[in-house]
Length: 150
Image (cartoon, rainbow, N blue to C red; front, side):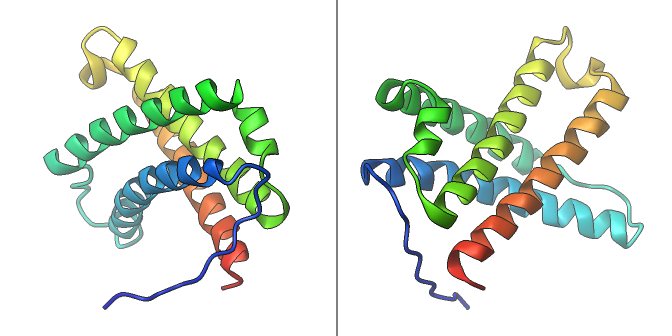
């Protein structure tokens, strides 16, 4: 069952909304994985997240977000100018979403730069990064709920 919602964005340049939506699509992938991981941790179940499919989705999400950030750079110069394109609750939502996606991208890039990748990545660094991203996901969700007045 799907729920229909109405969102009113405030933007000086409406084309920025398409870029914001592309980043939000990336957020939804991270949110899905984060919700399932949180459920397993809360229920003290065996951790099976991320699955192979999740890893493929994370890789795809990384590529899409990098592409979106490149487009933001091309159109706005940097993410601060992009964020300043928005007003009201849209600005707060955009800042939270940007923070989340930058944190995600930086972590994925750091893992990718590690010789041997994830298998050799420091466990403490990984746990800290996952916790930061999950916190950012929550912040983005809260900002989105304010945006839609839910």
